[in-house]
Image (cartoon, rainbow, N blue to C red; front, top):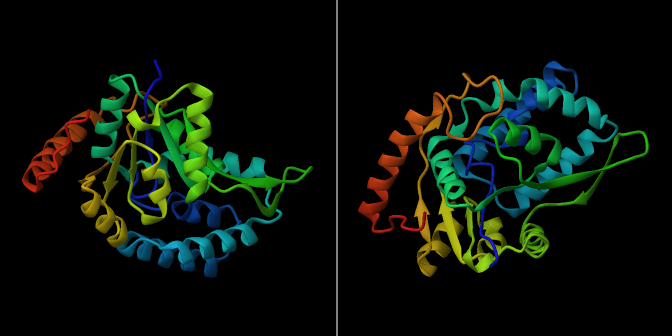
Length: 265
């Protein structure tokens, strides 16, 4: 019998900010970014948190990032992210997301994080959260281990859905019985690829689709601090558990009031 999976977008679904922009300050301190770029990233992060980003904005960000990183050494970026991930991510994780991830894991579903951010950022971040299954954008690397400015695979839009279908074939997963969580209309192909799409903190366009199609809509509001973690642990370990349980209760009450409470597990 095929297995089931739960696919989670990362930015504004599991964490409260853009994962890529969140590392702008560590990159600045390490000399990869100048002050002008740092300020620009801070403005972009603020705008993203308040309004999200549409297709054109995301494409522009991707192009600028590709141009900016050309010539950077992949190994240096990986080391920097590994060293700073705890400080960067600790206060950004939604308690509600952790609770739902834990529910899916307990139900025996494969939890997969699927993000348009670079794999060098997504993998360490997910390891910190105790999540091992990752699909993310893969920048092209030259023979010297440096970024070329091109992309081998862009985990965005239809690319996410195609990667999900390939994983389903490879690991015998039933997408009609699987779940997908995202905040962005740009992830509509990802949502349509599964039988149980869930809109999380949806932007205006995705909310309209979710209402029209009667998809579940959730509002995540409780970032929790995971600073007490020294080593990666199961998602609902230690200090995060109490906060996550409280936030889940609040979320469940709000869902019932909207008449869209989750019964899917």
